[in-house]
Image 1 (cartoon, rainbow, N blue to C red):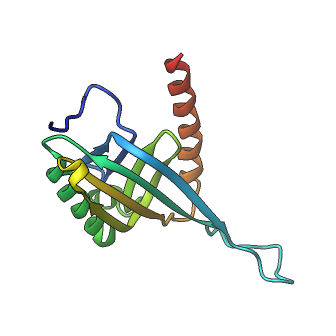
Image 2: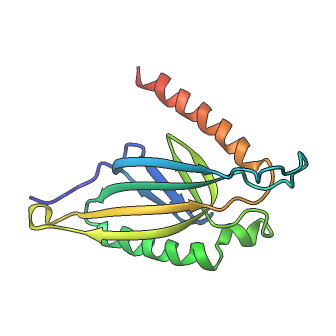
Length: 163
């Protein structure tokens, strides 16, 4: 029996460099871990505009269908591009860099792939299991908050459309 994907459904996660989207339909786990920076004791009330927390987004899924090897190659290429600079950075003049991550839980720019692993087994021979860990490296400013608000709106629309 061969694996297949119905491409008429919305993917669970999309990773893009600003030009090429990589859709992942069969995401089985998705998590966001936020670690907040604590101010130094007796520090002043005046602070520079810097990110106050670090986000790590991890997800696992399954690459299925005839294109699974192409999606694997595309993810590997995106991981390298997230370190060197993406098309998005070139088009925005460096205002936004890294990868774009779109999911029902969040929309983030300035993402870098921290780790990427692939595996398969004899039980699922025509699939590739994938695990991705991404780090959010935002630039100072309000762009991330705007995307967080947009993400809430998209989630609400998705929930309303499911009923």
